[in-house]
Amino acid sequence: MIKDGTQEPRTRLVFAIVYNKNMIGAGEFNIRDFTNKVGEVAYIVNPDYWGRGIATDVAKLLINFGFEELKLHRIYATCDPRNIGSSKVMEKVGMTQEGRIREDLLIREGWRDSFLYSVLEHEWKEIT
Image 1 (cartoon, rainbow, N blue to C red):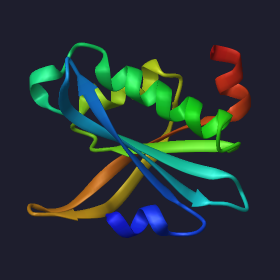
Image 2 (image 1 turned 90 degrees about the vertical axis):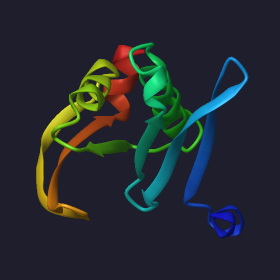
Image 3 (image 1 turned 180 degrees about the horizontal axis):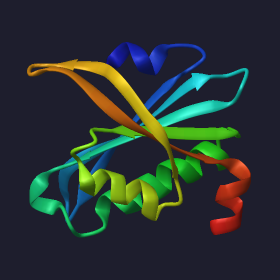
């Protein structure tokens, strides 16, 4: 939302994913806790562009931004347990699955669980 850009301190940043001059998705960074230096990343890519490593590249850029620019300690992400592709992206970028959050999202079909993944700053430094 436009109001997010004027919020102080700023807690949400959304970036366009542009591929061959076409906007094909978005990457999002949310600072969830300033005191404990925690952020959340999310991404969405047009299905026509799946399987090209784009989501993996976006996730890496977002995580690196969180640790390098925002000086965070922990970054997490969640996904639908049925979304195998997103789980694989999180694992490829070095995130660890912490567990399953039960019925945390209300969707059209009813309550849905989420998988929770995270990476810590010192872990990121070891793999990059």
